[in-house]
Amino acid sequence: MPLLEIKDLKLDFIVDGASVRAVDGVSLRVDAGETVGLVGESGCGKSVTALSIARLVPVPPARYVGGEILLEGRDVLKMSRQELCEVRGGVVSYVFQEPGASLNPVFRVGTQIRESLKLHQPLSPSLSPSDGERLAKGRLKGSYDDEVIRLLKLVGIPAPESRIRDYPFQMSGGMQQRVMIAMALASQPKLLLADEPTTALDVTIQAQILDLLRELKERLGMAILLITHNLGIVGDMADRVAVMYAGQIVELSPATDLVRRPLHPYTRALLASVPKLQGNQRRLTAIPGQVPSRLNEGGFPAGCRFAPRCPKVKPSCSEAMPELQEVEPKRWVRCPFWD
Image (cartoon, rainbow, N blue to C red; front, side, top):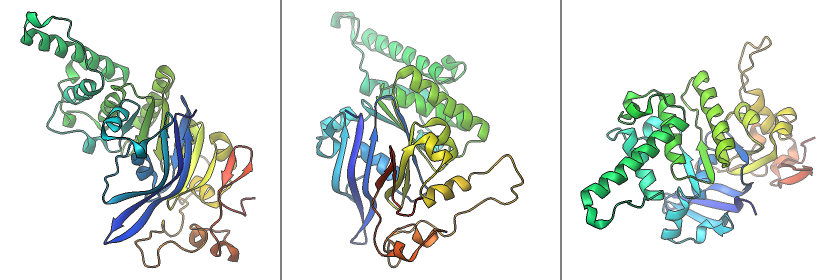
């Protein structure tokens, strides 16, 4: 049984009284201990899909129209509030992009990690009630501090005994991201959702964060859903990759096969836009146009949603929406002209 299985998920946002489809029939599976990359441009629906896994998209303005989100076989869309509280953190944790905006600036980082521990790993006091409430509370706080220090060491923060009292503004962007990862790991999740974990970081820090995620995955045995717009990152880290465009998955493939031979024209365009260190490339390759939105006049184009930007477009592309089909073993693509 997969750890996570999304089946034909459809999600709308209510905008000015009208329904706007943000996620349109997405199906995705993540097995225990696996790393899956979810790739696409901004506005494709990646983050909304990820937030839907723990039902973090507020309703309203969102509305779950159909589909299932199965975590360990249980449908998240049918869970009670208490069941959701157990799933959020206990089964799935998030590392959001821009840690400086995610961390609370008025609380020390140790306090913020300690809060996650108290919610998901309550400690039993070792003292009897007759020993006094003050001593019992002190013992609990000391135990939590030891665990916070251990987590900071785990994510590679030097001198955690002193950094536990730092405020977020006293840390660099890379250190803040490590604190975010420590907070996510505090609940010992089975699935870590990393949403653009290297955004706004320089390339050296990006490599360190990715190496850290890879090391933690192997050490803790957790699965990772890595959300990014950079195929160069997932090609090096993921086992499988799902490419998303305009609310739909357009290609699903083992990572090595996708990087070596992409099938969908959109995937090829994403790979071509990754800067190359070798060769005589003078200009960066860009994909013309932008991701279509139903908010625009006319909404999504008829037929294939990538057709207006596709260099290989044919007249039939605008006639009918192509289906996601398995064209090779373990390789799925939403394009009849993939070959």
